[in-house]
Image: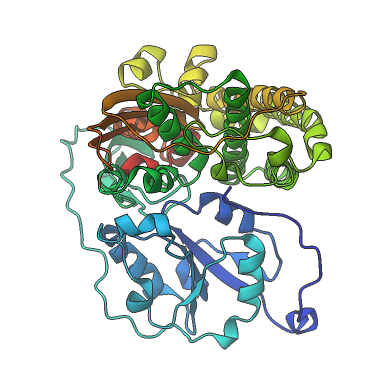
Length: 498
């Protein structure tokens, strides 16, 4: 999973040197796959401090991939860095990304001369590299153009007793309230939002198009990229659709094991989202509790599997539980962790400050969500609660508790499965599959003509169903509440843009 935050097992070299250095200030840019990694990095080390403005930073951390549409905004941030400045690019083109190579990704080494590339996607790797940033080349002069101005038509202004001017506030595409780039143009009358315009597509990679150009087995890797923050959900949806085409159905034991892996991935996403929301709400105790909960969960679950689940979730592939389960003691700690999630849920429910900041804003009616095709925790928050931001917080934490306990029950059971290799003989046919991902139901419509590649691929993406609702959910709200409302929806823009 993205965001490896295991505690270091040894002291890093050069600690004496660090005592003589000033803290390095940094800003981050997430192309759509680095939300958990960057959340784990924030406030992890006193030597590395995150700042809100690139004018106060001398280090820019970029998580790839970056689409061409995102380039002007990225260039503006790089130009604003305090010089001398350094750029760290995190990520390396993986084999499954090759079919996407022609879909408009930017080559950052050409765009930002002097940038340093780090292929290891982990917090510890970033911290170790940043310590020696003086050995990199400094960011050279940038000649690329910046962001082009966008014209927004203002609505008719009605006369009021107190005269105010309508203004347009541009939020994004680099902002803290979504996982990945999104721009919102808010037309405001004083502190009230009158209307909103959504501009997305900054993380578009053409996943469905690339899958049609790739052989069935290699396409499994592309399915993981639909939502980089939830790779197992995309892989499992694809595996289920292929098994339908093959006329196969997994055994009860295999289905339960897959469900437990998916449940732990949902919890993983929920907890890093909770850290993200806590920082926007600026409640110090809430931030500390959410961060501790997320890091503890990553530490415990990273020791469960002998092999990553993405290595053994494939069509008609069976495994032996002892071959994937690495540490029974880590599994035994999961029930205690469910209690910790419940404790944070009670804290959210009883905290008066959080109630003032989250109750009664961002209301979404159940009927409207169902009509828009919304599923998952946003819908649960409206069905089980008031449908506001506070209800969505409570619904996510309640679902996380249930997921942890369900996964624990499966993993502690005395079951064994036969070993069988994956099968990739795909007959002609049509299949529909859906799995419950962290942001809602991820659906896949797959058509085969009996050839070596899929003939038709259509994804149902939960975040994309929420994007059209942003103008109506923000209209009439206070400006100070806008980013809290959007953050409560947990939009993953790589998944939304496809």
